[in-house]
Length: 120
Image 1 (tube, rainbow, N blue to C red):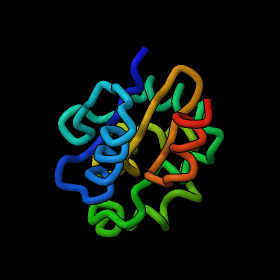
Image 2: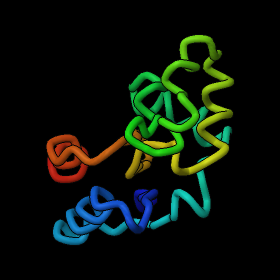
Image 3: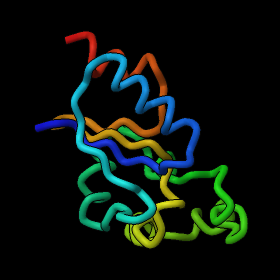
């Protein structure tokens, strides 16, 4: 299966990540994270695959995150409630996301991407 690349087309980090994929000749399927945001079911699968805590899936620098003061609410929310909140709006989700058969990469860190795609 081709990796699934979830991005927001006006996000500079997403653009850098997509350029990296193309420069390294990695085929992928693209999905607009805002128009087709991750579902509760997808997030329930992807969060454990990432090996990261759920809070790393939140776009903490985004306007919605700041305007709704989500940082202050997370401690009182269950994991299920946090997942449901993430699934309401693709702009709440840290991007880009890359989903492969065995892992999920959150954000664009070249070292992590090289390890996943080039070290094989």
